[in-house]
Amino acid sequence: MNRPDNVIVLLLDSLNRHMLGAYGGTEFATPNIDRLAARSLRFTKHYVGSLPCMPARHDILCGAWDFLWRPWGSVEIWEDAITYPLRRAGIATQLISDHPHLFETGGENYHVDFKAWDYQRGHEGDPWKTRPDPSWTGAPTFGRNHIPYDDSRGWFRGEEDFPGPRTMAATTRWIDENAGHHKRFMLFVDEFDPHEPFDTPAPYAKMYDAEWEGPHLIWPPYMSGAVEKGILTNRQAHQIRAQYGAKLTMIDAWLGRVLDAIERNNLWANTAVILCTDHGHYLGEKDIWGKPGVPIYDTLGRIPLLIAWPGQQQRGIDALTTSVDLHATLADVFGVTMRQRTHGRSLLPLIDGTAASVRDYTLMGVWGRQVHITDGRWKYVRAPASKNEPLAMYSNRWSTMPTHVLPREQELPLPDDRATLARMPGSKVPVIKQVWTAADALPFWAWARAEDNVNRLFDTGNDPSETEEHQGTAHEKRMTEMLHAALREVDAPPEQFARLGLQ
Image 1 (spheres, helix red, strand yellow):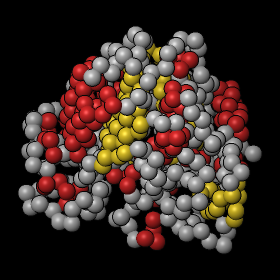
Image 2: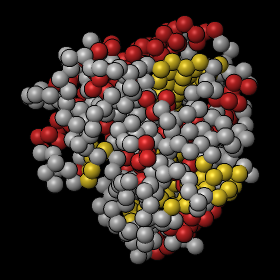
Image 3: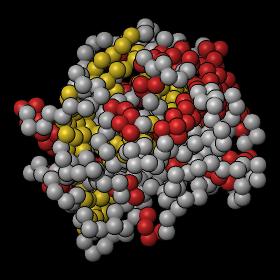
């Protein structure tokens, strides 16, 4: 199989697989994603790895499941993003993004090895403006503190001023102005939509809830049981879901302009186009909202992957895949190798039909919460054995999620007298290892603790709603053994085995 000259990666944040027409969704209109799917390989068992936003991008750009040893952070000194060997190989690389976490504490160094990068300002937590435009009256935030978006929003005068449309417009311009001038290139579009705020102008805002009066509900709560607990009424729940749909349809429309640019520049013949996401988003399924500390059900964890590949006809691929496999595929396409330990499997054997599968399992999780493993049918959720300890962080860049709404001392505990030098899993590089107990103040994303210390097992093949549990069966014994072997294979820290009771 001839490898394509170029790759365009289109990452749409919080993209729900089950809401796309290409995957059978009928609730919201996604004509341009469906248009891409009509010429793409459609992966049906593609799963998240590390969660949430920046850990997921670490999977794709660095190729390792780092949720096993840190919560959220930058590219470390012992590793490279895929862009570094691409740059050394003479491949032109361009990042176009409105994703604020790439340019905040905890997102350092992901963009620096791109040949060029373009940041479109003003989305969600991006501190773009020091004062709000008075034309923006705000929206209910369900307990959030002041958000920088409240200062930015009033400065968007029309649809074309919103960060998502600006990002897609910049992508279209780059393709028209640059694609024909590079021998080989990788264009990486990290688009924050349809992530909240689910804020859109007319006609989108009322497209799926025309009767709503008052400020639209653009900020979903992050919790389980929001309706049951009275935080949301059924009417408000419908409005939030409708606003997600509005944002999805708006960004789909602007994606259409990117596809038009690919078409008029004759790129389908020599360019692979990958549409992917970091994770889904709970919008009331099981009365779960956002990304709280619950198991990673398929709503969040089974994600879309479409790959338009030169010379390959549209078809479905049912093999098990995950986000780190995108990293391995990029390295394979461009013929580069990585200096750090990676966990991905190239998808090229699936694409050219020489293999029916490339992996037997995939891991997924959020640092400090449950660890999940699936074989494509059975999903095992392993909780801490008792207390959520020991929790170890391995890092030489002591930074984590940007939490500008918190005092500095609450963002991340500093190393203390328990810290030691250890070896990064899969590396000989010495790093700081800090071990915490359940009594310690923990990094931001570990605040949302697991609901309980109960392990769960779902037969997702026969029970896609994941309502029936199968603990205590021979299947749990098999999946426990698979998890133990998988953690050993990826050199998971010994603290993970201890906290999960797998020693």
